[in-house]
Amino acid sequence: MSEAMKILFVEDEEALGMVVSDSLRSRGFEVDYHTDGESALQAALENRYDVLVLDVMLPKMDGFSMAREYRKSNRSTPIIFLTARSQTEDVVEGFELGGNDYLKKPFSMEELIVRVKSLAGCALNQENSELEECFVGKYKFSIQKQMLELNGKVKSLTHREAQVLHMLFEKRNQVLERKQVLDQLWGDDSFFNARSMDVFITRLRKYLRDDPSIQIVNIRGIGYKLML
Image (cartoon, rainbow, N blue to C red; front, side, top):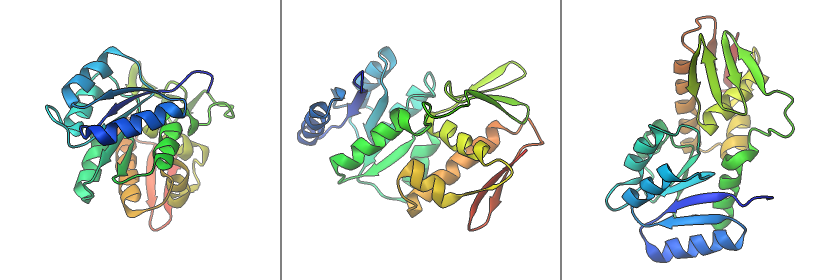
């Protein structure tokens, strides 16, 4: 990394927080560590970070509430939730609030680092992509800026939303296999990751609904097809 990735890390269990922070710093990351949601939200709004890593259960303001407030002014910086909770409803809620990934405790540092790097800039593969902008139906899709534009109205996408739309566009009018997306963007095709992908597909359908010629069709048991 020519410039260290900057991470906002929020964890109220200080022993764990210090271990993870020190481990990330030892591997070349710049880490801003907080133990409560209120101070972390203030830092997030005042500084630029490449990734936010948020524990869900936090004092003063929980991770979900913090993400909800942060997304009002920033839709693009990736968010990873850390939690011991494993209920499907919690996973879905996290993604609906604008989360990009979900890591269950206990987790390995290697797994966290892989996910941070992926979200911070690898998955769109911008260096190898010949496309910077394309048209998805009537929408102009800026891949690197992560924006959709139609009739002068601009919609900012999260990093993961842009990733999924980019993969759908590359396979437009063909079937994009669910397993391919899950393996490439989420790391595996587990049940929880599959549910989170469904949330992102639902979001993209909503964003693209002003052009009725666009359809994202569910190919049952296989994947999705972006029809233009």
